[in-house]
Image (cartoon, rainbow, N blue to C red):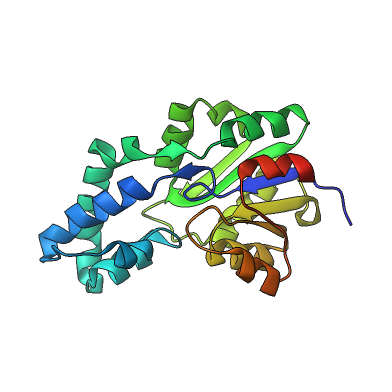
Length: 213
């Protein structure tokens, strides 16, 4: 097995618990379209995966309504939602530990890149990451595109990298990009049964990364 040099993290549901803010922004945005009774179960579909697909699915919107809905969501997110997130316990310590061990750290997130950088900055860990790539509203990057960007910007081969994420989309993107995968079952998407069925390792707490690296 090739040596791991680069660890690429997902953000929402892996580094931080942003679910309160995401759900809040979906609810506030939904009010513009007569959606006043969205349940937590319905809102869970908005926690992982491509944002435009999520907002269409969760709010039941037509394609022509999506740009306006995104504007509403972003307004609520910047004003209130972003401040509702917090890092998962032990994650801050693990990021410093991995950096001190000499690993290159990357971020590949479907969150808009400028918001992702601001989030890491607010946590005081942005400087620990060598490469940060996120979504934008002009080019429809996929998660595998973002993983490839992390590889290209660091000059590290796919066989020497691993993706750490909590969603099926993270796993599928890692397979497409040719990098290994570690599931974060404390997040929003996959559970230990899914990880075992697909034969990849998983962590139930960020501190378990210290046993792997």
